Image (cartoon, rainbow, N blue to C red; front, side, top):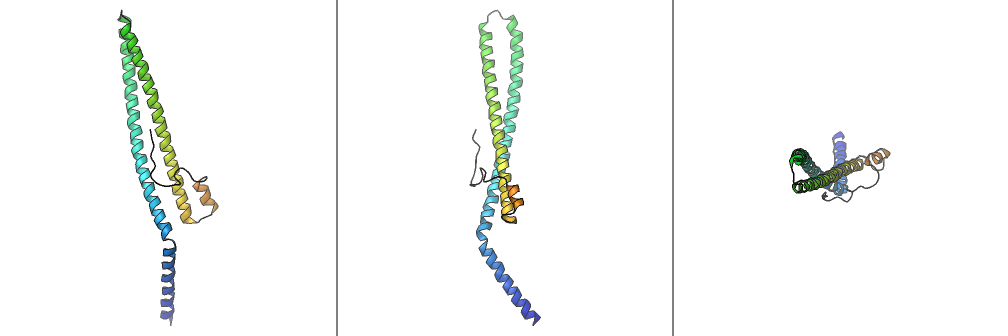
Length: 161
């Protein structure tokens, strides 16, 4: 009798487990897709961070070259009698300064975009965790942050320079 009761309970449990698995299959596949998208976004963010580092080092290299050229020009400028080469060199320095300013802006934009991407990925992960852990709880709503962010639609996002 105990064996029959245990067997019946086991069958009911297996049936309920199968029903729950069928009921939540869509949510599980959606979660797996979101997890893959998060991994792709993190890889892209890491690649972009490497790009920012490379641009930053190039900016420093160009700045050092500019300072070196500026020093050399100031040395030679005092000994030159003809001012036209000096005028051209000063114009080139001004152009380099403009380029450096543009590169600083681009680095700032990329850094901001990476920060935004990281923040939206964290918010998406928090929303996914909240959705798994108990929908509607105040704690999960506080973790998820305000409303849908830029990553709410899913898909592959890119940062344009």
